[in-house]
Length: 163
Image (cartoon, rainbow, N blue to C red; front, side, top):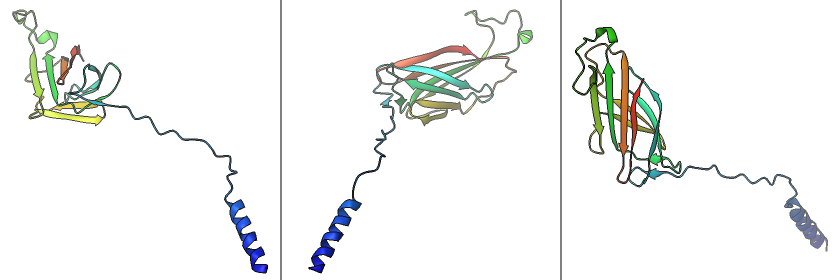
C-alpha cells in the first residue's frame, strides 16, 4: 500500500510540475525578408544612385521593381563617364558638331560573359560598380555619368548626371 501512495504522489508532482502557468506568451514574428526577382524576371526596373566616387568611378545604386521588390542577379550594365576640363582650359572653338564642349569619355559595358569592371551585389537589390580603367588624359573639372541596366524584359536608365 505504501508503494501505491508513493507512486500516486510522484505522479501528482510530475503532473503539477508540467503546468503552463508562465505569462510569457508573446509570439515572435519572423523577420520580413523582401522578396526579390532576378533581373531577367523583372518586368519593370527603377534605379537610384546612392553615391558616386569621382576619383575611382565607383557608383553605388539600388535596383527594384515598381512594386519595390529588390532586383537580384544583375549582369547587364552599361556605364558612360564624361569628364570636362576646367573652363579656362577650353579653347573657344573646341565645341563639337553636337554642341558638346570638349570632353573625355569612358564607355564600359558588362554582360554575363565579360566586364571591364567589378559589378558587385552588396545586398539584394544594392550594387556597386567600379571600372577597371578610369584614367583621364587631362585634368577634369566636371564629371558626369550615365547608367543603363537591363534584363530580359525591362531596362532603366539613370540619366546623365553631374557630380
